[in-house]
Image (cartoon, rainbow, N blue to C red; front, top):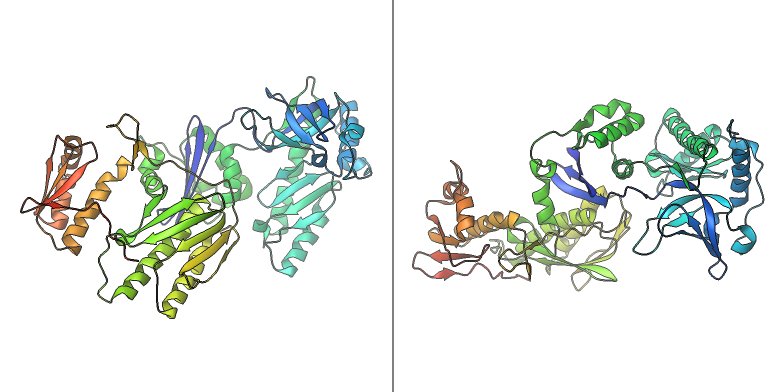
Length: 524
């Protein structure tokens, strides 16, 4: 299997797509924020205490003060404050964190009034971006994430990811980290650390400790507050940190600065694979050049088509996601209804597994497959779904088909749900309504032609379209129209009709009668 990553950097957002054998399986996009990012560490002052909320507001340079709750101070807040005072008092030499004795833990039922004072200096980290009129959400429990480890200053515990099931491996990793970590730091061992050598883990631990020390150097030099002590890696590197797999064939980036960042990051975590990072310099947009845009347009939205005219209808509600499987205008199988239903359902299982990863559909997913009477076919569908979901990084559970023909799936959300708008504003109604993506219009027409010729046996007909669409179909030496005629026969004719709306079309048979291809007959 060939896996490739494509990074599209725009002024307002960064989009990352992952393909397997040229097929889009994961897509992430995030807006670029110049000022704030989750993970940034600040040295800031307490602006106002709120005893009624048992919280305070902290000035981190945003137009609205950030919110810090008492419970987010962390149990080791006293130790952190002791260390901070020592650092601020000696602005020449950074004292090691181990030189500060551990202070009593902060009680969980304490009060913000007795712990903090107005104007007090605190080290805080953003855990939630500003939303609407609300400022950022803060914590004093600092963390510095890496590929394999997460460093927790002012702690001593070593925890291993629960996803690592082998007790021997968990014990090995815990022993390694305890032997190499400096005093005064806690560590969380991530799932991808399973099977890694001591040198790899030790190198990353040193890098993370170096980041913490660099942040403290900035604190030492601070003259005016707030000051940014540690900045989260760029959006692209942050997204790639959890997504990266050394088995990738290529990582294409269309921006020079981001290319350098990604290259430096891959060189740090997998030096032998740095050659896979490549800068894209083509004239076409990167997603258009590698056929990503078309796949995005066809993979999101309420209706998703897959093989032989079948399609899924995906609805999102407050409580769950509902998926309906439809055979569409697919011709019946020669082997009968049962074989036809099995074929459609197996194809739906393949597409649904991809859609769950692509959209990150978390929580409860209920799938209404086409009814099947044979128990072996139902078991075959269940096994197919389980096999397809093995490549999904998120935790999930799949139940066999119920007596109502429903499959229930629960899936952990890896990131915020993706909601990509694929509808375009209709040019004929000045934005009063929406239509399906015009990029896929010719594909839709070809599917109808294929259905007419190969399944319904109608070899001679005329397709009437808008003049602009006709001009597009006829452009080039080997036009789309010529390709259709070579593929489906010379009985396929395309003519313009000036009365039609932009994406309106009509099929006419040899007798001048309309062939209704707009109604899709469901086989349920």
